[in-house]
Length: 305
Ligand SMILES: [Zn+2]
Image 1: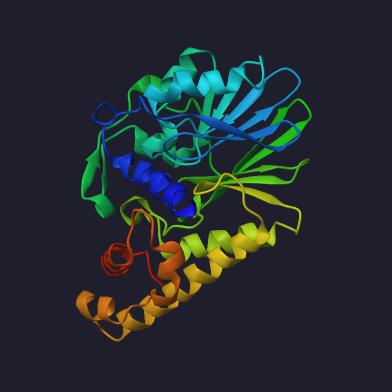
Image 2: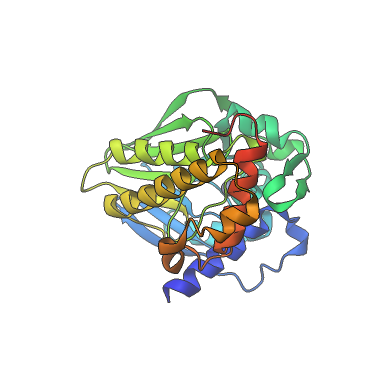
């Protein structure tokens, strides 16, 4: 069960670098889960969505792929008749921003970190997948951008989007719902599968670990997290477990790279061994994940330490 869920989430993630037209969304179901009063997580294909329902408007975190928008709208309509006034993109990847154009046309203001708009405005190369992702249409670009943080007041909810520099990309934001103590982590957290680290777009393993430590620091035993990929809700303990995995693997890679080991030698050293049963069953198998990080840490000038 867990493995199946991880795999489907992982396959969806892999699709971030493919044009939407190349994918078949007809079989995808969009399902919602209530996380707290007025707060829901939606799962389809791609990143987990967050929905905040206020007294007179709704607020959406990420919007997956354009072909899924009718299903996402139907899932939202089953929860509330309030309009989606804001869409917040946690970063620029297509499995989190693909629905922007349709939601903007329907009246939502799309908001994201400054670097999200910049990256979506021109073609981007994702080295981890050896793919160039074309620029987004103008109508899909965020129309409000911020550099540090921004706060929304959505009915009874205070929604704070906080930029986390150089984690999964260089434009990540986490979304903290203060009253109900829920945090949407964007792709800084993949729970139960090795995470994509987009070094060519400003991400790093060290940055993801630092971001996760920050998530942990702002939480208590009651905080609930909506990870970018994996299950739609986890607690503090799962975030701590994820952080330990990131920290240990990063430290080992740093040591091996510091010793001048080649990629083959690093793979042979199996730096992820005890984590593979739990985290290596997603779409990034252990060797592939180690390779992405080795290449990122050795070839991206500012990604390490
Ligand atoms: Zn992503």
